[in-house]
Image: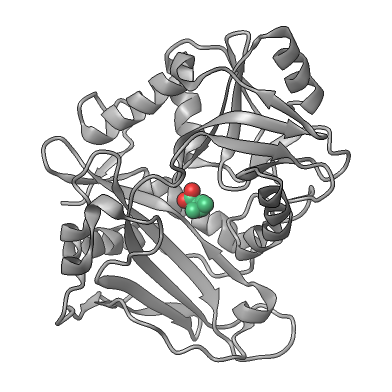
Length: 352
Ligand code: COI
């Protein structure tokens, strides 16, 4: 592995950034990290100005979706330090996705060091505004120019970053999807790979037309059990118990999901990772024991769900202000990131 070559931009775009009106995912910081895989090794690690790349129309990734990615965030602490939240977990998951998609693994320690250098160079892009952060997008895609289905022999790994604010502006309205399927057992549902998101677009578009923001996917076999939502893992509180579907091979093993479960267990809250039937959700709603429904994810952190659509009916959920657990865990995550509470799980990584 070579050292990282650094080329700094001659013209920063920072002056054009309106921190008060950031649209999630539309603003890109000045620099990006790149390395390429060829002749059996990751090589030529470098940090360069963010710019367009040359793309061959024959790239395997464009045709056969041999492409994986991650999402993590950098934040300012209350002591004006910049920190990353659980980056090791993201790079471990990237390698898990890589294995499933026949992509060569990356060196996780080297990549973390490269990311810290990148964030340090673009530290002026980390928003020091409540609720905002620097979203980090690591991405690997196949670059062999070839028509035919086979694993590529060359790849590009890019990390770029975006200053972001909230992903959703308000609590969301979701529809339980029973016709289309996101993932089946034995498939790639647990992998953060491009195709999982591409296949979700059409069913989500139909739901948006009906007035929803997102879908809740159900299992591909019987459409009886809750899986995850399009942009987040799903959790519910029924009778004071926190319940979430098992992260098997059809569900993304969310890092925010894991963090929320760890905090809940630490607080002594009953936690159940198990199959969650749609019928159980409906029964609990009818009985008044379904007190909270929310999504967890890097982009959304905690996203309250206010309405669930099911077979033409709308289930209205309790007001967000009265949701004790999801509001408290959201505050706790913020405190850990800010450094205003002890990082007892060792989740915070200083950028330096
Ligand atoms: C994330 O939560 O980081 C994701 O990759 C999901 C996407 C909706 C931004």
